[in-house]
Image (cartoon, rainbow, N blue to C red; front, side, top):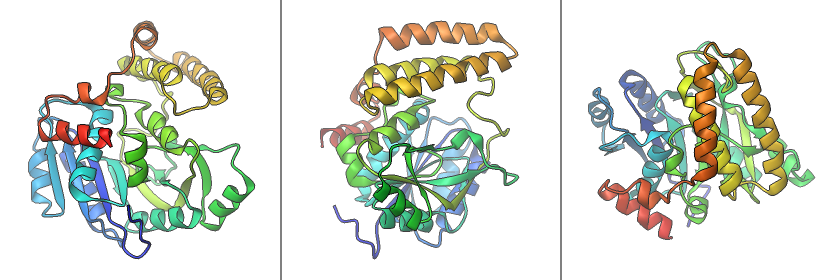
Length: 316
């Protein structure tokens, strides 16, 4: 696959669900990039508002994918990336949620840094609406990066990372074809952690502070802010990842596992309804140890052309 520095084909993948006003902002911001994208695949995750109409009104740059059921962020990205690869022949995929608003130079800075550092994935600096650094999307530095990798990243204006988030992640398309798609059964939470560490195992990734996006969440907070019933997905998906995924080496699983337990303790300590978290822990531990995520061909079955695109991409 060509990754020509002159004019790479970048296809943005935007997963949307019932946030039509934010989607308008996101699509306008992607279309206004100083470095233009070749297409924008918008995945409407069975929204009940007029998200689909908003995407259609955005013009010919948008390829709208309407799903008949909500597949979560994980399924939405898997579906959108498959369609992007199947229909648009990209060199790079640029991934983001519908509440991600990139500044005009965001894509150009990601491409420049990734090429200069010889990285296969790059992530933006994520801020909140008031300009504060957003703690929800902090990348994990690559602690054991070689001196050559650290110098290459520094020359590109960034730092080597072991993971990054779907809130503005640029990833090389040939690597996506090699490692596969995000695991749709994760539904929400840790899907980008599992996927980015899978992409970056044995490869270079870079965090690019000069590439800035605004993550317009309702509140400013990290993942240890009281998650309520969603704590189930945090526990189940982490256990799936540590037990089933090949994205991390054994020592990494041990280190990140300890870090996760510490974060869970902080989450419990700060919670206003610990009974909900206990229930999420109980169910998440049960399902995370007794089950495993299904192949995407199963979890994304029955979606017509999307299912066919997923199957083609994952067959290689």
